[in-house]
Image (cartoon, rainbow, N blue to C red; front, top):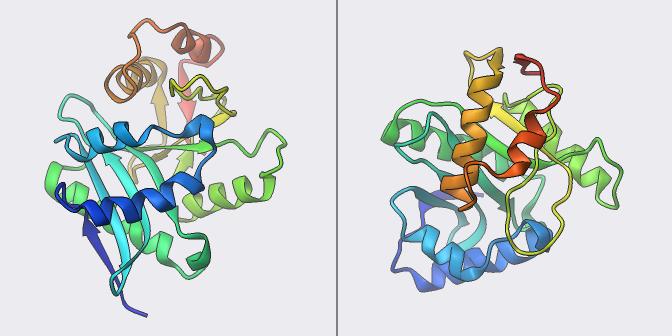
Length: 212
């Protein structure tokens, strides 16, 4: 089975529709952006949407935010079609997209937002599996830190974790984490820099946070 990783072209309407068909069923509504927002991301120089294809069929995607203004990249969304999972497609997509991003824009830490498996839910098994998937690829969780998703769609976001992909990092300092959160909230989600959720996330964290 030969898979190809491609960058979604701004003018590829059919490709966008195929991507959106997977996106719209892969995440809880509380974590989704609107179709209009995704089209804006597709046309933004700060985003790349990578798609995974088997022949002409789109079977997965990931979206990476890579602004020159930030000291990190954000893997905002990634999903594989439900009928094509457990075939190694996700690992190949992740590693290929990361390497292309590093090659095109330089090496920075990659941040990844995932649902926390620490809080029991109806999707417990799926959340635990997703965390294991990313950790197997070398991503690590910021210890003693609960992430609050900045999505603005009037839904209550589930408990989240923020993972870091960077081979040389063992820990981060609280001021660095604050900078990351402010940039995510303002540049990715359009929130205010002084959003009260940022202070809430930082209120009980130590000055040095380990990556585990």
